[in-house]
Image: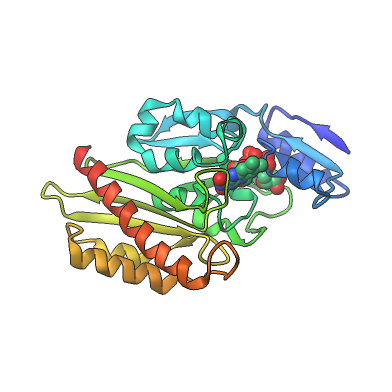
Length: 286
Ligand SMILES: Cc1cc2nc3c(=O)[nH]c(=O)nc-3n(C[C@H](O)[C@H](O)[C@H](O)COP(=O)(O)OP(=O)(O)OC[C@H]3O[C@@H](n4cnc5c(N)ncnc54)[C@H](O)[C@@H]3O)c2cc1C
């Protein structure tokens, strides 16, 4: 096995494209190293992207935020301004594993591991985050909801990496939230995860919303019907009921020992409503 740690995006892409056997990007390693130890993957080449400055930076850009793909949850939490503007994204990244895991785990790794239960992905999708990709044919942007196609299946082509995520500019009276249900208090995989982002007008009416659900289908879902159910409302009881109904309707979860299909659908409805209420409270304060 060969280990490389290039200092440029182009260098990483060239290494990945030139690999003879299986090649893997290494970010925090909290998925990859576990999978290697379990012999699930046996890469011939590992390309560590943490020495590439672009993947490690958090910067304000065009009124929004650019977050490097190899930035860890712990680093995001230390950014007070980001945390104020995108609390849901930051809290989702900091639900991943334990304190130790959060010091390693990255947003790019969480997305590119291709798990429908990945915690930061619903929050990124609700935020309207755009993934910036680099590959042998240059750079391109892809909405985060279009990166994961199914369990372990990504829209990335050979040699392509996620360099960063762009969170859009935030109008006043906007906020977001992410909640998940796990059977334990921590260190568990989401049975359901729900991310909601919304904006209010001066009268407290929701003018825009995005809702995303994790662990209820083969990929993390953007749920436009759920957003439509609350736009134009103050999230009163009828709007909450419509939101829950839309969340329920989209769910096609698995049925396993950690949650039956019926249970996951019920939890999806409840978490979506609670996330929306938290986002609403936060938006009122912004
Ligand atoms: C004890 C433990 C608890 C955990 N708890 C949770 C949890 O609560 N919630 C949760 O969602 N996950 C959890 N995880 C899984 C894991 O920590 C997360 O998915 C984490 O975000 C992965 O990030 P990473 O940087 O460590 O990825 P890595 O392991 O470095 O990479 C993961 C995969 O993505 C690829 N990859 C990484 N970065 C890129 C990139 N920029 N471009 C292209 N491909 C890339 C790698 O090749 C690899 O296939 C847990 C893991 C452990 C070991």
